[in-house]
Image (tube, rainbow, N blue to C red):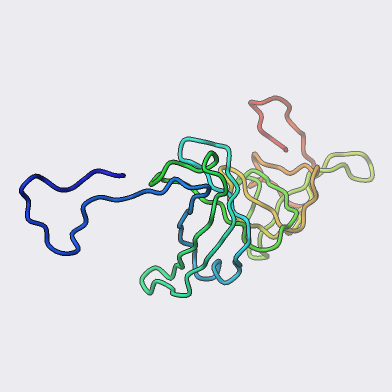
Length: 191
């Protein structure tokens, strides 16, 4: 039971809320909102990850309901997920973060934001690789960029894992120019 909001001798009207009740059951519900386009791709039974505000590990939850109404001001829909087991659930009324998977999983590569160049031909990076004579050169490579993750950006297409890209000084490069790779943490040159 929550805090009682009643005092001795106080006159109470019909329907006055006296206190709140929190059920401690074998499961807990987490209500959260998602954008309308995200809600359209969610289904009851889908899995989400719930993080307590002070915890970096997640708790699995399953979506049990998606509200059919969309808030006209925010264009968001309310979603309810259920966490099985009271031991796994955050405290009643706790603030949590929810990670909702959106779309099909895709393989991607993350590079430093400074490696991505934008130009009239679209996004591109400079890949550092030896030429046929064994000399290290920078080659321009068009890429499809995605979301930013801190100081890195996701490259969805055009780059493979393990390829080196110019991160520092890439604004000075042009296609087929010879490059020297600096080593050490202070260099931050190629990755």
